[in-house]
Image 1 (tube, one colour):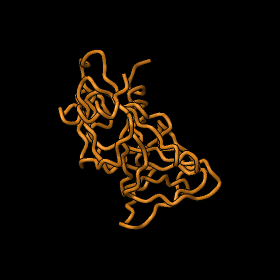
Image 2 (cartoon, rainbow, N blue to C red):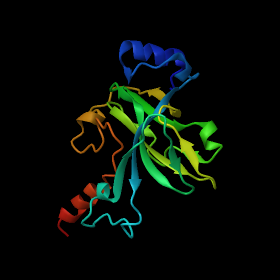
Image 3 (tube, rainbow, N blue to C red):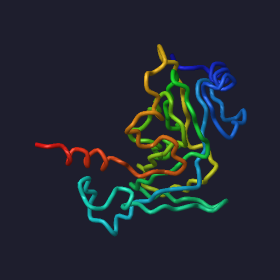
Length: 196
């Protein structure tokens, strides 16, 4: 069941959904809340590396360069480019609530996609959301830290999960405060260790 604005506010009051800093009224939709773009980005250094090799010696985080956009400045997302960004808000979910990161229609209409596949936030999640920003359009787009960049919807599970995300032994992103590069190479590393 997707939560309405009434239920989202009730869950926030009960501490089942925690969002900080506190959201102003204009960030609440009928069944969602808007999150704002943070100032930190991770940019691929495609001129230094010919391709991504999941079994390579360079970790995936070594393929990207962190970048902080100064207050009042814009990050220019070039056509067909892909970068990681972070939300200003921190989200924490109870063990029986899941979140879904959604794009905003107003940005989609100018070609900006905010996530490719990572839209589900498991019960027990805590941290800032990493955004997978792409520009599908033909024109560069200026994105400003502090602008509303995405929205979250929330769903009530049928029962609490047995192991919340932040307690999973192999969770990769719990508690993140900056846009983290993919940690898929860790999974491939595990495959390398298994006997044939």
